[in-house]
Structures are given as structure tokens and as C-alpha cells.
Image 1: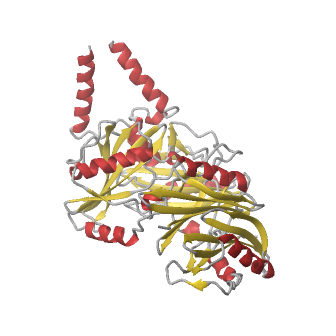
Image 2: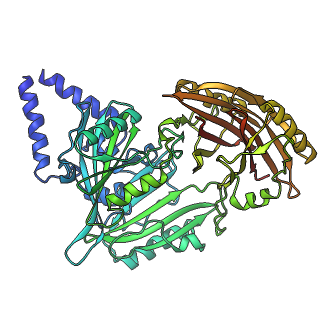
Image 3: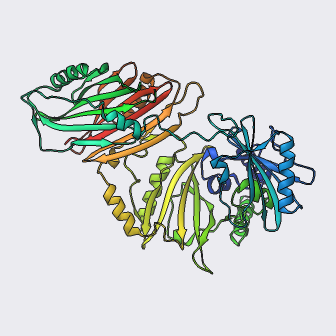
Length: 289
Length: 293
């Protein structure tokens, strides 16, 4: 019975932590929940050896390899060493070693500030680049031991050395929507329609879309109202993409090319609230092309 | 023999409880440089100790205690440090069920639990997405979430010690009331479609939500190699699975969507789901929910 229990425990741990040579002694639940925060993307494969890709992760002879950690599918790799050299000398030696392999120091705004702020004495740090590949080099003393780490990662999209990081853009940005405001159609309702005092109404500008809505009272059906408003969209250079007509919701989707060359999408929706009351909304979104 | 095994396990747990860290077996060099990258000077202390702030919590029997981690986050004064404590349980329940069961357990143990923040924030979801919820007891807040990894669901709590950051339960109550729309319980959860090219769920490039005048709109942007019709169809199946009744649907060259309704105790809830292919392999999805009656 004891053998069975022990064997079962070992099998559980082995299955949960493949290739985790350096982490084998730790319960995988502790790692997953308290170290990796239950995010699969945070998981590290740590081993007491160089990673499969060694370019830019080597060090001179006076550095002793601790091991390597790979996060994701080669999304980022860290190789760690310790050394008895003084911090300045260790940093200079490692920098010279990597320079000789063609890795050059990169001066970009993001390279000036380390991504991770560490407590204690500030680390000596540099960002290196070779053929668009990047390595972050750091030397720091922790509890009396001097460590050097080399961190490699892929940039998406690939970026040549010393090129600034492109600004983060949304496919439909607020700036684009300000332009889109000019494309918001103007509607005339049938003469029998009346504005209703009820809510909702007004304009909502999210990061991605611009919406306007109004509540009306009308003797017409939702389909008739949709047809009436669709004619006006055609007249304002919108092209229809699709339409629908349900018991609660009727509407149509539209596209239009702006003077800026961008495509704008419009969604006209008429929602039947009941007793001849309708919420009529138009939402506009823009793409990057 | 069973008793021997049980005693051995208990002894191991007890050894850890008396101050031994759960990472103590590791090489400190590996711990400082590779596992705890960037935290080398002040490593978290990970033990089996249950934080005092959670000692009154009785979790259901489907949950197994793992341990807690305390990380120093700063100095309050010369002698006092601020810290963040994380506490973790494991369970075989799915993340949504685990989070709901945790909320129920907290309520039964005397906590007041606030709804998930932002009614539309977690409508469009990836498997990795975790939503935090706040709870308060005796004026002290905790927050919790559930996430899955390696086929196991982990429920994690965080507690701020000696920190003024978001510490007042009254502020949380005010915030929860300010953002409440009454539509929270109707908001569906839509898993991002799987990319046929990679077999992985589409990664969200941005989520947003807005609410005004009893209307909640949730939005997401994502990249995927698939047609707009397939993407809308995938979401539509999930709407049906969550009790929504179809009203109408449409599919064009670059847009597709559907209109839905749901009745709940006399209330009629309507939602419109629209998907737009804004660029090559780039999509936006929006779900607007409104209470009609």
C-alpha cells in the first residue's frame, strides 16, 4: 500500500512539472497559484543549463552559469550567472564579450528605463541589439552575491536595431472617431414621428465606436422606419452590407469610404420598445485602412 | 497502513506550517534570478499559513488549501512595511463555478461581496482572463479571482496590509453603487473564438465597456483568421447556450450579427451582438444589452 501511495504521488508531480528540473522539489500548485498567478502565459520552464537558443546568452569564463528560464513558447528567455567580479567589472566584461559577438548597445527611449524596477541597489543595465534581436543585460548584487542576467525577447512586429517602438494604436482609435464624427449621417424622420421624452438618447463616444440614439413615437412599423432611413443613408454615400428584421430589432449595416481613405462602418438599429415607441440608433466605427 | 500515510502527510504539512517556506528546497540562486525575476532583493515569503484576515472563511469541501505568499510592497515608516498577501486554494470546479462558490462561502462567513466590477468588462473573454471581485468584513477588504492552469482551477485572494490603497470598504460600496446598472446578472460571457490557423483562442487586443441610461455596451478587438460570419456564428451559439432567444440575424461582406431577447421575472431584456471585420484578420465585436420592460 505504501509503495502504491508513494508511486501515485510521484506520478502526480512528474506529470504536472515536465522539464522543470530546477523546480521539481516544489509543489506545482504552489508555483501555479502563488508564483505564476494562475496565468498560463506566466509559466516558466527553468533548467540548470543553457537554453536551446544560445546566441547572445553566453558569458566570459569568470561567470558561472546558474541556469535558464523560458516563458511561453520561446516568448522570452532569461539566462542567469553569478560571478565574484566587482559589479562594474562584471558588467564591463560581459558587455565586451557580447559586443565581440556583434551585439551593440541600443539607445532608444524605452531602452533608457528598465522594464522592471527592483528594490535595493540599482542594477547596472543595458539593452543590446543585433539584427533586430534584443538582449537586456543586468548586473546586480543580491544578499552579497553578484548576479548577471541576460534577458532575450521577441518584438512584435520585428523592429530593426535603434528604431523607436511604434506607438500603441487601436484599430479604431478615439482620434479616428473624431474624424468619424464628420461621417455621422443626418436623418429626417417621417412627419408622423414624434420625439419621445423617455430615455435613452444622446451620443456615446467609446474608444472604439461613436453611437447616437433617439427615442421616438411613430405609427409606422420598425421595418417601414428602417426603409425610410436606409434611403437617406444611400443618399449620403453609404453602401449597404446586410440587413435584418426581427420582432424586437430591425436594422442594417453600412460602409463608407472617407476622404482620408479609411473605411467607416455604420450600424442602424431600430429597437421596438412597444406601443409605437422605438429607440433609433446609429453606431459608427472606423478601421485603419 | 492508510493511517501511516495520513500521519506522514500531516507531519509534512506541520513542518511547513512552523515557518518553513514552500520554496525553501530551491537553490537560492535559481530563486533570486530565474523564478522571481525582478524581485531578487525582497523575495515573497511563501508558507502554508492561512492569513489572519481569512481565518473566519469556511471554504466548501471541494476546495483544498495551498498556501499564502507575502510580498513587501513598500515602507510605511521606519519600522513598518506595507505588503500584499496572496492566498490560494485549488479545486476541480470550473473557474466561473469556483468564483461563484467562493462568493457564496464569503457571504456565509460574514463578508459582503460586491458584484464583479464593470458590467460589460468580462463579456468577451479568453480562457486566461480573470475577473476580480471585492469583499469586505469588519471594514477590511479582500479581493478574489479564479483562474485555470494545467487543468486545475485556482482561487486566489489578495489582501493589502498596512496600505491605504483602496482600503476603505465604504469607498468600494460607493463605487459599486455608482457603477451598478441592474444589468450585471444578464450580461453573457462569450469566449473568444478559436483561431483555425493556430488552434488557440483569439487574443483580445482591447476590451471596453460603457453604460448609460440603462444600456450596457461591451466591446472587444481581436485578430483571427476566420470569416466574419463564422465569428458571429460562434458567439451566437454561446448566446443560445446561455438562455438567450434569437430575434433576428444578419451576415454581410464585413459585418454579421444577431438580435436576442431574454425574459426574467416579467422583465424583457434585449441584446444586439454585432461583429465587424475592420481590417485583414482584425475584428471588433460589440454586445449591447438593454432592459425593455
